[in-house]
Image 1 (cartoon, rainbow, N blue to C red):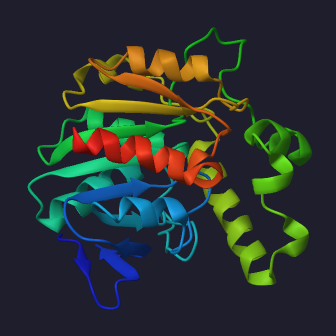
Image 2: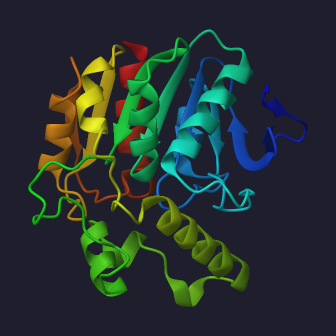
Length: 263
């Protein structure tokens, strides 16, 4: 079923799923898939991308104010949803940008080789198991003390990390809803698909893999290995950023992405 946008462009419906969405800018379409939490409509990173592109940034089902059917609970469901969404937009070519958990989704979609995909950007992406079974690649954010997760996720945890004491009740509710949905999709196996590693070699579009230099939740070496599995992919660090460069260094990250799109 075709995805439809209705004015004002803050909702998008795909089949029976009503998605919260940020839509801004004009030109080539960039579909942005968020990480642990959706970006705000006025996020600097989305603003910068919209200078050169038409940016579409949905909240995943169960995140933000997007609905989630009771039987919709796997990464497989999300991949099919976003493929159908993109098919319904009617664009000849779309650039896919995914951060963290959204980077995992973007990699899965790209590995399926949709005809509409022209470029891929992965930002601190999850989704792979690279080391042995006893050695974790990704910090277990659900079973690690929140203060530790905070310290390991940000270059400046006291400057950019969310301050829960300052959040409104509505913002805290959204945050908790995001966390519940992330747990649902990524709990078992923890934040990876054991089959994805095999299929990354099938990605046949220009790919940029960008990583926060201070990411201690998923280390830069994980990102280098990710890039090495994708033919022709280029890897680069974003200095002064941890796991969330789209929040911590939005201009530096946007510069990298826009340069890649302009080549």
